[in-house]
Structures are given as structure tokens and as C-alpha cells.
Image 1 (tube, rainbow, N blue to C red):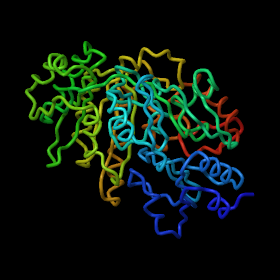
Image 2 (image 1 turned 90 degrees about the vertical axis):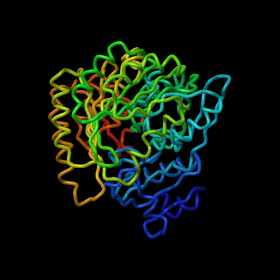
Image 3 (image 1 turned 180 degrees about the horizontal axis):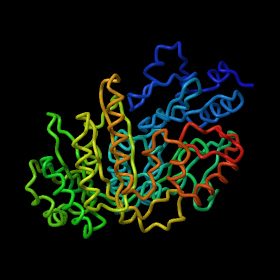
Length: 451
């Protein structure tokens, strides 16, 4: 049996134990509410280190958590007492501009990825905050500003390299292990440690993007306008809507938009958005795609306490708009946000059975994001988040985006996939991880395993 001393000797990367000075920093992740104390953290230098870590955990019956960017709100990148397989040192990105593809290691963030692809005027769908890791976002589906143009992050995957629970290194693509390839496109980290991702890239140049800010007493009127505008918006234009507070504490309603095309064309398309109101502030203008990807970074810093709930919505009827504005009127923290994310476009044109990601026909996703700085205030801010989420459930489809799940139980995990896809995922789990080694995630349990 491999001992912790053996693992330290065999790995090229740094093995960090609770007694080490680097331990407290290494166990911290984006969500400051998570205070897990792993038994060990291996900062892997390459795939061989990942194999060593998986074999150690399996043979010693250690719980495993896998960390890419560490940005998941549920805090599943770390665990108590177990082994964290930390990929954050594996961040290389290699672009093939002729083929319009990129191969990236699993510790890369979207900031890392976009910086390399931008050199060639290329990009793929990848979140809305540059510090988000490519791995977790892609494995759960992967929304972003380009999704209405090019589909989700997982729709742009060409292949992945995976270390399985047996310690085998396999490639999954449309032609090699296609069942596993289907599962990792939405099924999360349930089937192994994905160590690299190959993406299809698309030409992306200067975009027209930014935020339009309205007074909070115009929130209902703005959301009605937003709903009507979206009915004819082209796929190149993505518009999110948020109820939030400004740095000075003033509550506002905002539209966040990105037009993926020539800015001069976008100006005509977004003119109705800019004319409506008029807004208190118009921050829309031409910018590099990499700049767009950092617009929300300052507003979503690491270290805050975060409690997150979400649902896909059937639509945005008047009653839902009224409920949203009423719930935000009761918000308990100036850092908390109600966010509507517009889907559709290329997301909805992918065949439903093509990937494990399931909710192709949803128009909107609602994210109820409770955030605060003082841990002592958790109870009241969590209560507001739950109440707002529960009040909006009647407008939901019953489905949920797996990347926005907290620790909410098996039924909510099933809701992320629907019963048919969930059972198919269980079959994959039976094949690739029958002992449920990889369970520190939104877990798909193999048959016969209760945990």
C-alpha cells in the first residue's frame, strides 16, 4: 500500500500537509464560507502526479476532492480529512490557429485561456469571470457571453484526457470512448480527473459590451422591456439582467450585454437598450473580448461568504417580474444579487441527447446569489437567499444548472439531468467509478453505493 511518505517521494509536485506553513493558503478557495481541512493537498505538476494521487487515495480509502480554479460556489474543490488533487499549477494553453483549436491543462482559468487565444483573434464560450477555472465550468456545461453564438463550453469540446478511478489515462472524444465523452459534457467530475481539454475556437474580435444602470424603482419596467427586447434579439447578442447594489450602496437594476460582432453593427442593435429609460449610467462601448471577460471580476472577488441558489425559468411572466422586485426589496446584504441569464440561440440548437447537459430549451436561468463579508451574519443572509429562491420556484422548469448547485441533495442533482439522462450517467458511473471514489462533487452515485 502506498503511504503518504511514498506519495511525497514519487510526486514532482508539492505535497502540503496540515503542519506545513503553506497549508492554510493552499486550502482556501473562492468562496470564503468554505473552511475545509484536508488531510493532504498535492499540487500536481503533471498527469503522472494525478495518477499517483488517484492510486494513493483509492488504495488508502481517502476521500478525494479535485481542484481546478477553485471557483465553485459549493466549495467542492476541497474536503475535510481527504486528499485534494490540486491542478492549479497545470495551466498551459496551446493554440493551433490553423485548425482553430486549443488544448489547455485543467488548472487554467478562463483568463489564462483567453489571453492565449486572443493572440490569434479566436475564442470559445467560457464563463463571465476571468478567474473561473476552465475545468469545473466546462464539465458542468459552461455558460458564457458567447453561448448564444457558439453554444456552451461543453458544446465546443473536441476531446479530453482523463485519469480514471483505476489510475488509467484515457482520451475521450467523439470517436474514442464516446460514452465517456458524452458524460463529461455536463456530468461534472464524476468519472475521473480530467487533466486537459481540447476546444473548438471561433473568430472573435472587438465586441460591443458593458452595463446599463437604472434606478431600482424602474426595475419592473426595465425587466418588462428586457423580456420584450429578447424576443427578437439575434444570437450574436447576449443580455443578462441583474438587481444589485452599487459600491456606494445604492440599489439598482442593470442590463449587462455583449454583442459578438462588428461594434458598428451592434450599435444599431443595442440602441433600443441604450435609449430605454434613459439609464443612470451607460457603460457600453467597444472592447476586446478579454476585457469583457474581466468586467465582473471586481464585483465577484475571492474571499466573500457566498450562498447560491438557482433555477431555470419557464419564461419571464409579469408575475415573475413582480416577485423578483419584491424579493430584492427585502435583500439583506448590499453584496447580494438577483441575476437573470438569457440562454437560447446556439445552446438550444444542439440535439438534446448530444451531451449530458440537459436544459437546452430553457430561456432564462435565475441565480439568487447571497454574499456578505462577516461570517457572523450568515443566518440572515442565507435566509434571504432561500426565501427568494423558494418564492421563484413556481416559475421554474424544475431543472437546475449543475454548476450553480450547492449541497442540496440527490433530488436536485437528478433535476440537473432529468431521469433518463441521470440513469445513463449512473451506468457510466458503474463502469468508470463503481466504488464512487470521485464523490466530492454533485454526485451521481453508482448502483449499490449509498455514498
